Image 1 (tube, rainbow, N blue to C red):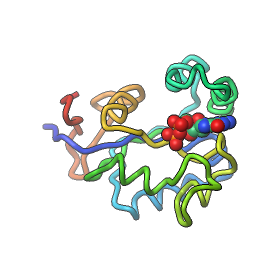
Image 2 (cartoon, helix red, strand yellow):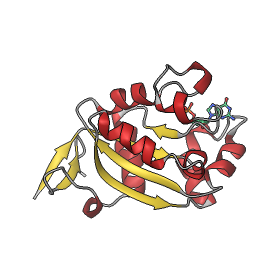
Image 3 (tube, rainbow, N blue to C red):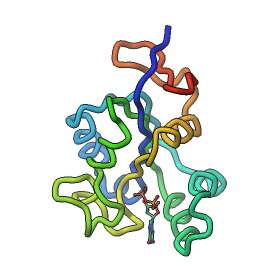
Image 4 (cartoon, protein in one colour):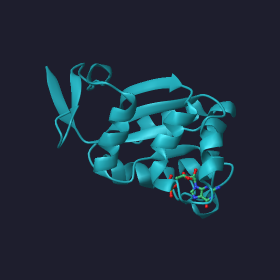
Length: 155
Ligand code: GDP
């Protein structure tokens, strides 16, 4: 049996992992009402990081970003909640932590605009694409133990 969910995709980036903030960040995520539908502790290859951030390939910070994102382990996760994408962007705060609101994950745990603790999808379509990049259908679960299917693609 499977159920559809309103999801976003997140990464706890290498700086936040090496500074031992995995637990603090996941606590804030679950306290904010997100269900962790899928999660892995992995290290990205160059190829994976280049592909994941391909949309930024013309930006001046692209090579440094790929180098940073492959510098150590990361946590990747699919989060489920009503209005997941927008609510998670609010919870993590602005890309540049110096502009992030008090209490947001980036304000609390980011070191710089590049080493900004977490990734959060910027649209429902990207949430599905990014989640499918890292997780198969048999690796995502609803709170009551069913397999989680993504809406609207049904994948
Ligand atoms: P996000 O959606 O808030 O993560 O921001 P973007 O999609 O615009 O950028 C992707 C990632 O690239 C950010 O999370 C940062 O890690 C990094 N980044 C964005 N802008 C800059 C920048 O001006 N300089 C550097 N060094 N990194 C940046």
